[in-house]
Image (cartoon, rainbow, N blue to C red):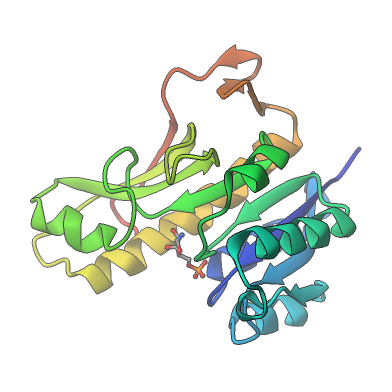
Length: 218
Ligand code: GRF
């Protein structure tokens, strides 16, 4: 069995990184997290990764004069890690078109909304303010358009009258921790791939995102 080497890129606490890494620890996993890279040494996820025995590195964004030089350093670090799949998980930088092109088809992101709704920031507050009945998170391939790449899988929950942005954030995170490792496993098994901007699932174009429904996400 071949094992897909995965690198996870973070800026913050890294709970998605941890879920992805933990799901790969069983002997049956088809992928393995070989490196966690942060853009700041204050990222809480670095300690989480180290506790799991995963090699970490920091590409400190503040030390680079512009986006192009930071992206080039990050790309070098990723290539050196040997990863075949790059997973952005709470990475708070916009990547250049050159970077995205270089890793096209092997670069994933998770966004806390049901894309194409609510690209950008403050997604939970915006969903609540709009009176949406449902909300969630989307795992997508990254393209040059911010939060605009083809969606692979969504975690979907029903909003409750009592929900606040904080409760929604916690509920969405619970779903994220299910769908992101799941997508990594599907890619590692060769069941999901992206060719020329089109997602294929078991060899056929994916017409609509795969959906994980979980109203109970607490
Ligand atoms: C998640 O909500 C994800 O959707 C967004 O950033 C957050 C990262 O959380 N891109 P964590 O660092 O994985 O806990």
